[in-house]
Length: 180
Image (cartoon, rainbow, N blue to C red; front, side, top):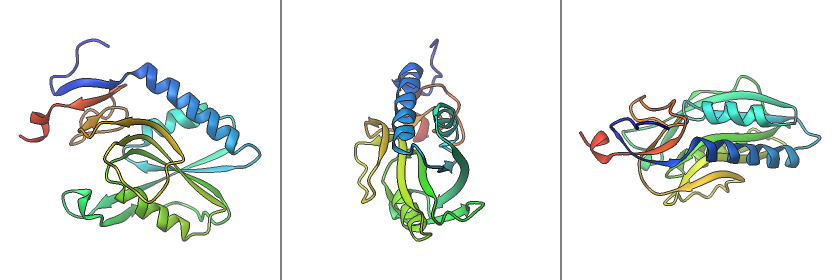
């Protein structure tokens, strides 16, 4: 992997582990949705790398769309979320899979699940690359890549101030990087 950027404390999930798990998730999703057309909803910006790899590994027909959400205030702790960019077409009677990069507090995923459930999909499931151990949500994670410790993580779509998003691994950010 070479030398880590100076703000990275340690690699939590290596590129090889990620690719192996993405393939396993794609195999399970393909099995679960065999004979159906899947409507995948990636949550921007963070899910785009995970979503790209996941969709390329699927063996079933699927459509890709994206949404962008924002939390009010400086943190997601308030639970107030709004839609910045919505889907391009209705999802009524579609088999929908929400693809998220990280479940941190669970507020964003809970909000989005309620909103999309109200649009009458045929089915609605969730998939996340990583979940922080502290995350508590009333929405089940149907497909999960990895559980991770409650630390600030970057890489493979995850960022800090729009930095580190394209690292090929998931890494812990040094506290001094985000407390400056």
